[in-house]
Image (cartoon, rainbow, N blue to C red; front, side, top):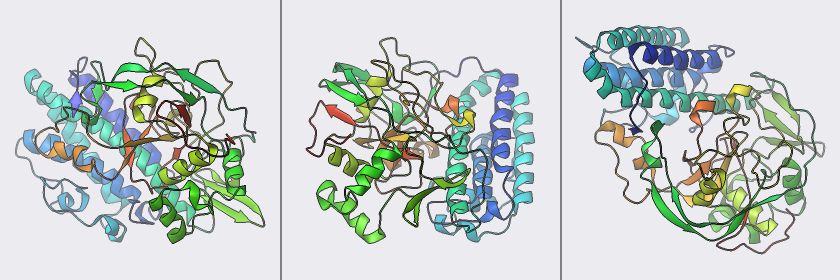
Length: 440
């Protein structure tokens, strides 16, 4: 993991940042009942209280354990219950069975969080400058780790609430009805480009090292694919025509009965979409969301286009000075829409929705950059061990904390995953495009 220096942190500012991140997790959990926080609706979903406890376990295990005088875990059972996948740390409870753990309850998890928070503040206040400097990368990783789980907490509770026939609302209001505007294109010159994180701030280890890639000239759609365009794909038999699908994707369509995006339901011939702010008629002007890589690839094939590579995406959203094309002003978690919204007005040569709204599937398999080496110890298990069988997504979504999104961030999910807030941006040119209807 890399904090490219951690400059600007001292004990006081570090504690302040810690309190901000930790408090926001509790703010996100506040609308949920204890019963809400205990449900695990499928193996990929973790209960809300598990997320709250796991991120606390992270600070207790990787910060307090090695530096707190006379350290003892808050509870001897918690390292087993709340370890996610760190083999180096020890055994752990089965992920698909997290919803069976009714105890500790929500209140006990809150006490655990409060206890670790107090011990963290005491430790940071007592450390000398040299020791604190050595701990900074791990502490900063803990901040970003918790932000990842804040996003996952929202994705997971969305699935939990979707299975309740009462259709409960988490928060927010639906977007205004909108129609799809004209899809535009941004031409990108390509050439020999540099990719990967560059700067003095935090990045994950999988964003490094910086390296060169050759790109043929290409173009990217200036906005995400919309629900209205997806309805056209469906009406043209998109989920029934094998010629658009990769073999594994077609097998998924048939095995799981896919007919529409994940949270869509047809009632009397009309499509409805479950969101964190309720279940509403599908809004044609909003970006399509909760589609898998297989679906994104099939749509691109149907449209006569393709998905961008992660290198093409990253190069296109960074200008010559290395500044994101849209800055941090996208529809991210700070807007509290909790759902993608319609693209803003088009601007020649500029990408819309590059940050926020939906994580964007790329055509790139998740693997190491040239020269990548995971860190030593348990922290080395954070990213590198998952570099198999997954695809890269870029850009963040409406559930991503704004200071957690950046142009070099590499998210990754299995190609069949649909519960994540993922969408589609088309590409053309460059390495070539498939033939199709050219409907987009």
